[in-house]
Each structure stands twice: as C-alpha cells, then as structure tokens.
Image (cartoon, rainbow over all chains, first blue to last red; front, top):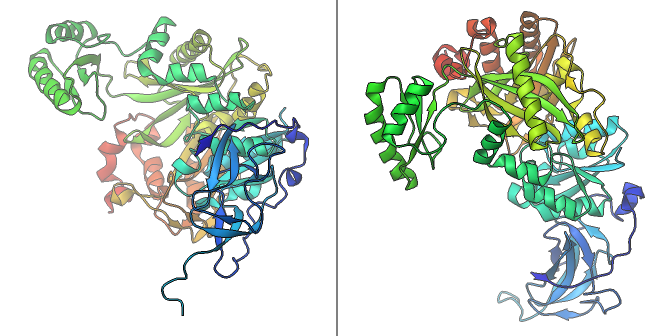
Length: 124
Length: 452
C-alpha cells in the first residue's frame, strides 16, 4: 500500500490554529445514509487526504469517473508515509466528501461509488 | 508550557492527563477507538480523534494513526499515559521523527532499561543492590558454592525462562542436586535451554517502589515510596504510602539508591524503581518502570506534588523546583476498582454500569472514567477506577477508605470493591505486616473470594 510520492508541505503552525478550524468537520459526524445502492469508501486510518500524487498533478479521480477494482482513489499520509487507498469494486465516483489536504479520522467517509457491472442475479 | 497535547490513551489515565492539561491551560486532544466513542475522556478533551476499530492493535497501539492524529491537530507533544505505547521506544522515536515531544524518558534510556539484563548490570554498577546470586548460568557445583555464599533458601531459575517453569525453591543443601536436575529438565523441555541460575530467595518479600522525578539537567526528586505487596499474581490491588515496613534508615537508603540510579543511567521524567524488601530490611532492585504508574496518586496525596504536571514541565525543558527528597505528610491508600469477579478467579467482567455514585467527603479522591450507563468494553484493561484516600495516620486512612468504599455505589458488573473491604478489615492489613504472598494465603478466609 506504500508508494514513494513526495509532496512539498506548506509549513504552517497548526498549534496556533483553533482546534475547530484544524479540521473542517466536527469530530466524527454521523454519516448520512448512503444513497440507494452506493458503496462507501471510508478512511482505514488517520491521516491527511490527498487527491493527487503531488501538488499540481491531476487528481486520481473526479466525480463522474468510472473506476476499476484496484484503482487508486486517493492517498492518506500518516507519519510521512503515503498510503494509497484503492477501489475494491468497479463503480462510478458519485461524491467526494473530503477536500484536498484535509485531515481525516478512522472511519470517515471519503467517497461514494455507484456500483457498475452486470446486474445482480436476482434483479428483475 | 505546551499549547496543545495529544493524550495517547483511554480510560481513567486519559481522564487524569486531560485534567492536568486543562489545569495548566493546555488544550487536550483525545484519541478513541470505535468502542470508546462515548467515553468520558472523549467528552472532556477539547478535540477527539477516532483512530481505529476496537482492537487495540489497530487503534491505541497503531503508531502511524496516533502520530497523524497529533500532527493533523497541531499538537506539540504526546502524553502516553501507562500501558499501550508508554514504554515502546519505537513510539518515542516516531514522535521525535515527527517533531513531537514525547512526555517521558528518551527512547535510548527506555530501550536500555527495558532489557532486564542490561538494566540490572547498569544498576549494579551504580551501586544499587540486586538480589544476590550467580551472575549467569551456573553448574550444579557453582550453584552449591553460590547457595552457601548467599545463604538458603535459594531459588533456581531457568536462564531462558519465565512463568515459573524451570523454577525451584531450595531450602537446604541436601535438596539442591535433585532440584537442579528437575528444574533443568523442565527448562530444557519448556525453552530448549536447560541452563539455570541461582538467586537468594527473598521470603517473605514485600514489593516496595520509589517514585522519582528527574529533569534531565541533573535534578532528581524522590517522591517517597509506595507499598504494593497486596497483589494477585503480580497484579496490584491496594497500594499505600508510606510503607509500614520501612524504618527511616531503610527508606532513606532506598531513595538514595533510586536517586543514584537516575544519575547513573541519565534518566529523565517520571519513573519508578521497584524493589523487593526482605524480612531483614535488605532491599533489592527488580526493575525500572519508565513511565507514569497506575498508583501515582498515592505519592501525590502524601507529597502534594502533581506528578503529571511535573511530567509536562520536565518535557517542556523546565528544571525541577526542588530536588532531593520530597517532604511528605500523613498516609495515603489506593484501592483499585476492577471489573473482575473475585469468586471466579478474577475473570474480567465487561458489561454495563447500571449505577455509579462516587464517594465524596474529606480526604477522598476517585480517578475514574465510569459514569451511570457506561459500557465497559471487553477489549481493554479491567480497571474502572481508583479510590485514593488521605488521612493523618494509617489507621485513620484505613477507616476513611472503608467509609468511602461503603458510600461507593457501583452496580452492573462484578468488581473488586468487596474484596478491598475484606482486605482493609483484615488483621494482617491492619497490622501492616503482610507480604506479596498475603492474598494467595488469605484467599479462603476472605468472603469476597471464598463466597462465604
């Protein structure tokens, strides 16, 4: 899961920022129920969310993109290690819930994907 | 002082550290696993970060998540509490690599003291007494010689061992040969290494420990001793200070040994030197706990020193105000309240706390994370809280502890409350003459265990 991707960090003194502003969201908001049939991609760890492999590069995915299993959706950085978060099933990115370079907690909703592929066998 | 500190722990110690932070105008960032979403420490902190699922290995022990929680919230330091990562040198190094101050000793000293052989060698060089015996593995002839030198009874122990396997108590020379043979075979079977070493058997032994604060700039303060002999399989249940077993000379010698050791090993922050105390008042170093301990409030109540505040000040680079031996007054007793069933071999008893009302009134402190309706998850330590009382004299402190335990309402799960009452009322505890063997020996007389 680790890849060597570098980013140039903007030095900023986070300790001087009020706690409420160091993270855009209140701690662990109750996630909205997913829209019908959408699959949720949640943060498997604490880290900083990056949409692109490096500053200025195009994002891994945009809303509306179709993704294949194993395709990288984003990077979570923890302890200066870049952890790639990948799609585990095919789908279309319907929503992205975190802004670039924002910190995320364990279990926080990152993406919602609309599954694609052959309809389930029990579909009418 | 720091502006913002991450508390990398849960339960009562997370609450304790958050209180110290707030009293020093420091913002507290808590971490929690999914099982602790509603826990008290999460609500007391200024901010809380969800770090993982209930399993500790994926949450409270997951170094990258804890470091990321600290760096993404702008913390300057991490307080580890006790347990979890508190004595993990890799965590201390990860803090340093990410420009975070670890509130505790350096990784290097922690690693050296975590190696028991290394720790004992360094302490011996500093003139701290160790249990007399052979320096390493001994032949049966060498064992005979050493036993004569240190005096019977002696213990044979497996060099590779632990857990009592390959261990034999020998009370007289005639028993040594057969004990050596059996212990060696047992050790060979258990560890693939039949080599044995020999130690003087300290019996009956008491467990007495010295709390220290060291500022890393040459200042060392000894914060008195704690008597911790009321234990069950090395799990302490009741601690008190001062120890009823120490005379002033022995106390002074023990504190002097701890102070010497701090200088010799270059110790910094809070630590505890554990000693075995023999019936003849000889004492021997066992190990150094390079962290805050569960029973630290006992020392706080007799000295008036806030040990967690001092830890934070030391971590900020401030020198100690006072060095030498801390002044102390009166007597303090701590009772651990565990979610355990004493009638069922102390099986952990997670569940829902249906009713909780803490005791109040003079001289009573209760450090806990429990509230009405708290669910005690099965994933962690069974410690619900600690009742600590202070009074002028030991008999008064015992009475006060009994009064407070009588007031305490803690329903919903089995706890060690009744057992503590039985022990505090016992003739042995009242006399102050008890050893680490007390609980095993007295179990059938104590209603909370025997069920009578």
